[in-house]
Structure formats: C-alpha cells, structure tokens
Image (cartoon, rainbow, N blue to C red; front, side, top):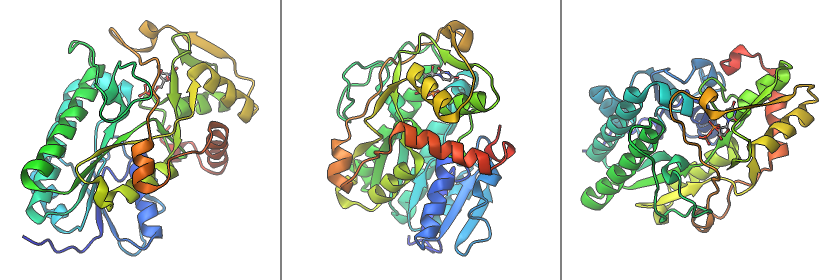
Length: 333
Ligand code: UDP
C-alpha cells in the first residue's frame, strides 16, 4: 500500500541529541522531516533550529504506540529510527524500559514500514561488541556479552535483537533496511545527564569541579563529532550497497578517558583537578566496563567514501564554543 509520502523522512527520537542534528541537516538540504519523540530523554529545545521551518513537523508520542507510528510512517518516504533508551546510567537504572523501548519500538517501526515498503535506517550501537577484544571491531566479528544478571548487557542484547529483526525483515520480506552501529558520538547539545562522559567533563571543568574519571582512566574510546555521524547516516540510508548490511559509524582516533579529562582541562583553561572514582562507587551493582572500543570503518569508507575524522581537540573546542554562546538549561543540565 503506497503511503501519502508528505514528508521525505520520519525521524523517531528526533528531539534527542543526534536526532535534532539530523533534522537540521535534512532541512538545510531541502528535505522535509517529521519527528516522533516522547521527550523522555529528548528535549523540545533541541529542535529550536527546526520548529517553524518549512517542511518540519513534530509529534509528541512513543514508538510503542502502534497506530500512531503506523500513521506517521505512512506519511513519510523514509524512516530513520533513533528512538531508544540511551546512556549507560539510564539503562542500568531503568532496565525494563530499556528492553521494551528498544525491542518493541523497533518491531513497531519495521512492521509499519513494511506496509509501505519505505527504506529504514536503524541506529544500533558499539555496545553490541561488548567485551570482545578483537580490536578494531569489524561488523562481522563475534559479540561477547556478560551475564544477564548485569543490567548493562540488556542494552547490547536489546540492540542485537533489533539488528536480527532488521535483517529478518530484509531477508524474509524484502524491506530495505540499513543498520548503523554508532560509536561514541559527541558534540554540542549532548547532555551529561544520562552518563555520557564528555559533556560531564566539560560541565565539571566549567564549574571548577573535579573531573570524575571512573576506574583508573586507562579505558579508551573513539569519539566522533555528531555532524560527521549525521552525514554518514544520511549517506547510508540511500545507498543501495548498504541495504541489508550493518555498518560501523565512528572515528578511529583512540583516547584514554584520563587523557580526555586532561585535554578538557587544558583546552577550557579550567583549574579543575581529576578525581579517580572506583567503578563500584560510580555505578550501582556489578558494573563491567569496556577497556577498548575502536571501530573498523573500512566498510563505511567503501560505501560512502568518507569516515568521521575530526580530532578530539577540535571536537572539545567546538563544544566549548557552543557552551559559551548557549545557556546551561538549553543543554539540559
Ligand atoms: N566515564 C567516566 N566519568 C564519567 C562518565 C563516564 O570516567 O563521569 C567513563 C565510563 O566509565 C566509560 C567512558 O567514560 O569508561 C565512556 O562512558 P560513556 O558513558 O560516555 O560511554 P560508553 O562508551 O561507556 O557507552
């Protein structure tokens, strides 16, 4: 059944950090965008750059609402599904919501998309690789998760289920689906409220408080700037070679969390100190962290010709600039 196709894209979770940048990108490019967001972790002020512009629509609601999701998918020619439970801290504190939102939400979106056959991009996560030590992580590598008694892994498992569902809809029913595994994505507007490390460090440095480095700070991550991630998503959604594939989206520039804290202090000119906090004090229960997380981005590069490459100093500077011009409330702190 053909949809009405009033909007070029439906973005679920469009009021979130990544979603709102994606919507701005689409509008700037001349695409129309409809957002579905329940404002659970997203905030409406993230969409200040979109509301009132031609071709922009916003609906407050949940991807768990089947009739609503079906109606909005029907009105769109493509779907970017970002709505999900996010943030390690949030996930550990709300395991039921995490599993329900991630698994049932994705199923609802895929079912709705099947009615009209529109292309779907599903956002997945580097959490999927879990404790694997096959660094850099390749999309076809094994995933290594911890015990089901540890809530952290419910996030990775729920997202793995999303990926299985997406591939099942592609293989079984021919729905054109692309899955992107997003690595640590950062940039202006990201809130530290749900545990993300860089916005936290930046807020701590600004307030002259100690930067809270968990564990010994030797764990590493690769941070990519949200604008480059958004570009990768928009390139993949219409790339015939990407259909039915899972693609890593991230930077390969690895940095330890301790070094990240030092850079934030140096670049912000703050006189904050660094405080090492044992994991058992930082997170409730038996927490397991990943020591290294680095993507293999050769598939992304071969599909879209470029990969995120902004370096960490440039990223920190961009966020600091935005902090000076915007208020703390705007960033959800
Ligand atoms: N982390 C930290 N201090 C904080 C928040 C996080 O040292 O205030 C650490 C966290 O334990 C992890 C890394 O920073 O090793 C990245 O955490 P985040 O939650 O941003 O993302 P993750 O990669 O764990 O999903």
